[in-house]
Length: 332
Image (tube, rainbow, N blue to C red; front, side, top):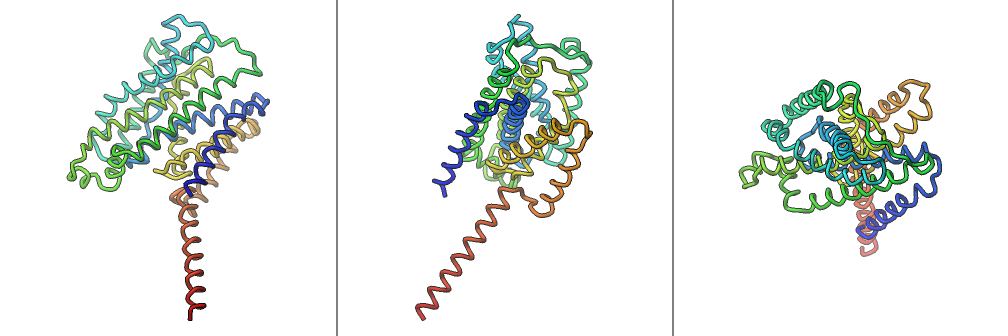
């Protein structure tokens, strides 16, 4: 099984690397970029919320902070538009992490259900601050230095940078899950009081996981700002971002490594495609998504990955039982 798993990962990487070379339609390339960004955000979000059980509905704080950091740093440093702006992407992720420290200290003082409400409240504080502060440009937004790339080539650098961020997010999430730190997060998810009694530094572990998840999400926000060329508070501090990222994880498999990847690739690419294809049809994709999620909740409440894994386990058990029965019959 491990061999097949490694082959699937390798095949996915090869497909991702060659995709922009065979996909010449700029619209589809744009869809691919957004799919990679949201998949990376979902993977990083799941690294904390999925492993610890603390559902964060204020992750757009990291996303918007990363976007504004990219824009403000580029304008403050008088940088010209081009590939050099990508050097600010990891720095924007660090800024998002630093912002996450005081936010996490406040939000993580409460337990899970109250934590969800606190994260929503903090999100709206950041959205209102970005709308009213002068250095953020207010409702007029901010403009990043113009990137003079040809339209046929424009999305290719964004694609590969977003792919690199996604690979980093997957490796980080896998490393956390297999580490002692990841076991502590899982222990908090299962029983926080018991984990505390066993010596887990619950407050420090939760804050570290929360801040770590903000790094990748902040970088994705910075890439989004570069690609859009101009950012507005209502788009980078968007409540739909939080809902979308959470739904991707629940759709694919909450708390699993592969679940957010499947959820991000399937849902974001479908949403972008339906939006582009049926742009005159209003919110048709929302109706389709609503029906899809209803089916998943009814028949696969733990997500696709867990459902398939359980189905495969039951199938293997039936096969082994049949073989054992057949062997016993021959012996008798």
